[in-house]
Length: 447
Image (cartoon, rainbow, N blue to C red; front, side, top):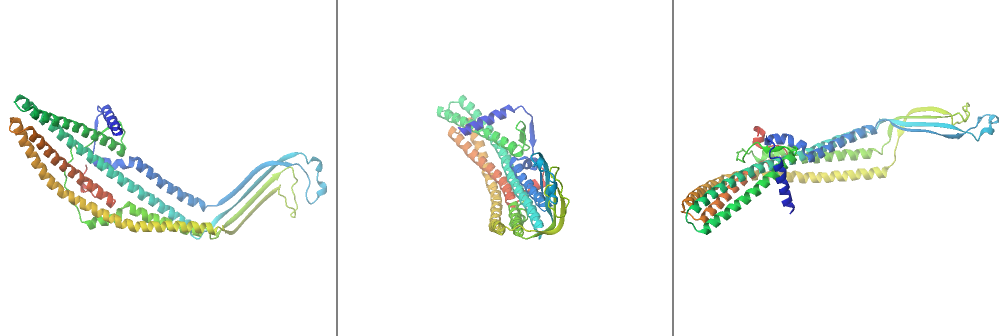
C-alpha cells in the first residue's frame, strides 16, 4: 500500500511539472555540484566548524583569567575611626547608606609545560578528522548520484525497448485479425500485449522515482525538470590499471584511513594535555580590591584595616597549581584507551579496505567479460525475434513462438543492459573503495 502511494505521488508530481522545460545535466556536472548541496554533506561540514571552536576555546583558556566582583548594598551609617573611637557618632547608627565593593584577581600564564601547544595540535587534528569524515560522506554521495544517474539511463533503454515491442505486437495482432488464425493465438498475443503495457508503466514509475532521487541528492529544486544529458545507457570501454596501482591510491586517499590516523593523534595529544593539567603553571599574578562608602569614615592609619574604604593593587610572579590528580589521571587513561581502540580499528581497516579494493577491481574485470558474452547473446536474440516477427506476420509461426521469441529477446537485452549498468557501477564502487575518482571517463571526458 505504501509503495503504491509513493508511485501515485511521484506520478502526480511529475505530471504537474511535465510542461516545465527539460534541463539536461551531465553526470560530471551533477558530481561537481551535487555533493556540496546534499543535506548529509552539509550536516557533516558542521563538525569542522565545531573543531574550529575547540581551537578557539583552547586559545581562550590560556589567556589571562580574571575574576571580577562588583556589588552595591546598604550599610548602617556611622562616623568615627578605629584609632580614635571617641569620635564615633553612635546616634546615627540607624540610618542606611550605600556600600560599593569591587574585586579583581587573575593570572597571566607564562609557562604551561607545553600544554597549550598539545591542545591546539589536538584541535587541529580534530579538524582534519572532521574534514576526512566529510570527504568520506562526499564520496558516498557521489556513488549514490552515479547509481541514480545510470539507473535513469537504464530505464530509458527499457522503456524504448518495451514501447517498440508494444508497437510490433500490435501490428502482428492486426495482421492476425485479417487472417483466419486460431482464437487462442489471438488471445495469447493480447495477453502478452497487456503484459508489455503493464511493464511499461512500471518502468516509467521507476524512472520518475529515480529522477526525483536525482534532484534530491544533487540539491536541485523540486520544481525543475532535470534529466540526464545522455539519452541511453551505453557501454564505454575503460582501460583498467594494475591492482597495485589502486592499492597505492587507497593508502594515499582513503578518507576513512585519514580519519583514523587523525583521530589517534588527536587522542594522544589530548591525553598528554590532560596529564599536564596537574603541573603547576607559572604566571603573572595580580589582585585589585576596591570598596567605598560614605557611611563609614575612612581609616587613615596604616595600622588599621578598613574593608569599607579600600583601594589596593598587588602584582607579582607566582604559580597556580590545581591539584586534582585523581580526576585528571582517570580522564587521561580513558583517552588513552580510546586511542588504543582506534589503533586496533586502524590495523583492521587497512587490511579490510585493501581486500575491498581487490574485490571491486575484480568485479570491474568480471563485468567487462560478461558484457562481451551478453552482447553476443543480445545480437542473437534480436535476430531470432526479427525472423519470428516476419514469420508471425505471414502466418508461418504460431503466436506462442512469437511470445517466446520476445521473452528470449527481452531476457538477453535486459541482461546485456544490466551488465553495462553494473559495469558502470563497478567503476563507481572502485572509486569509493579507493577514496578518489578512478573512472577514466570522468577523469578525461566531460560527460
